[in-house]
Length: 207
Image 1 (spheres, rainbow, N blue to C red):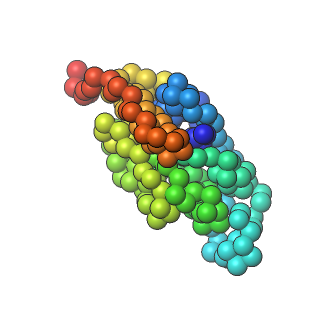
Image 2 (cartoon, rainbow, N blue to C red):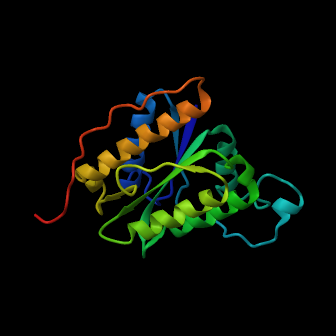
Image 3 (cartoon, rainbow, N blue to C red):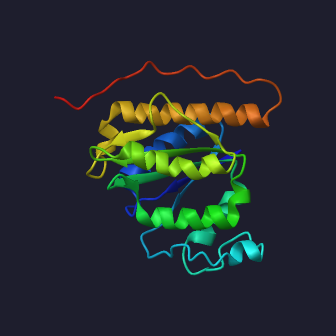
């Protein structure tokens, strides 16, 4: 089994990457293969609503000059997905949205019915709106959404700060455990018991 984790931040090794890495490490410990795919920081197209991908049954976007089709090819290999993004004005990163809308429209069959989750990183607020925005396409594609002990959000601004959000990092690990459990029960014969959960580590930012 394999989970594809998509880093939608323009910063390759920033806080979004660190949060996704925490999920990935947990999945790997549970025996699930992972790959973190960075969409990069080069210009990407938005969907032009040409519908050529659907009309011609291409299974990919008709425009092949950016990262979109490289990502959709990875979707076919994956049993689950985790999308991660920083929060900009209460929304996921614009380039990530542009790419995902094209992938979901042109290659939605590669997503349909698989397990999925989203992760939003923010400095202070807007993360729940960004989180919900990333979840909505999965809810239209019969995906099995995976939750955690809290919304899948973590806090940090400067590179590396997200690791100081102990509850946020625990939320990422719990997400990984939950996703692994669902994947195993979907793909293995017989019921698989849940892994023990960590004792909750609540954290707030009044110091």
